[in-house]
Length: 173
Image (cartoon, rainbow, N blue to C red; front, side, top):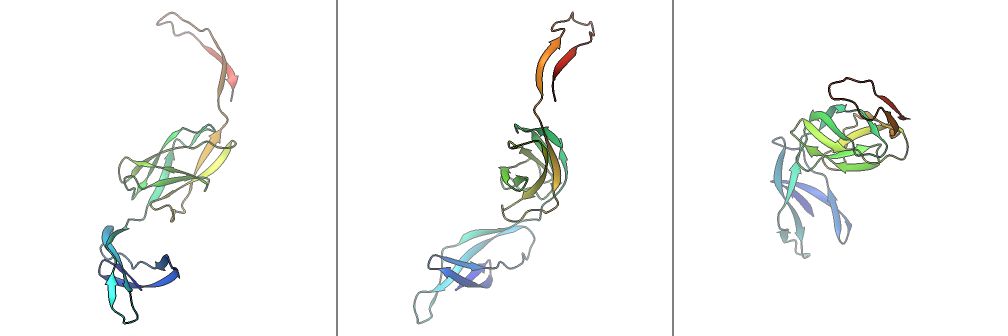
């Protein structure tokens, strides 16, 4: 049993009657998509057959250098912009505290938007990224969840246009 990546054959290990595994060879031409097939024998005579082709993708390693804003409410919903490189359309997962995964929206190969999930409590969490849901950058950045702001009073509630009046706000956090 062999896995064929483009033109390169790699040995496969049978895990069960419905599963096998193999290690992909290094990419020969940078980020690219290659045909993938499984070569197998149907009989003890040794005649080899190939499965129908599927696609296998090699992608650039991603990295990140900044998260903006770096804080938001525990209710989630903050859209953060992540600066980095190697972001692929529809493929980037954002991890908040190694548990909550959300799909990012690449603006370009170097800008990504992620919406923060709800947090159980205030505090600092790690933000990490993955192009495949398996391999993460490991260069985590921090995001701080704050208690939600509540507004209980604003005084005065109305002012004359152009007056530049002082407004007092009462609430928590």
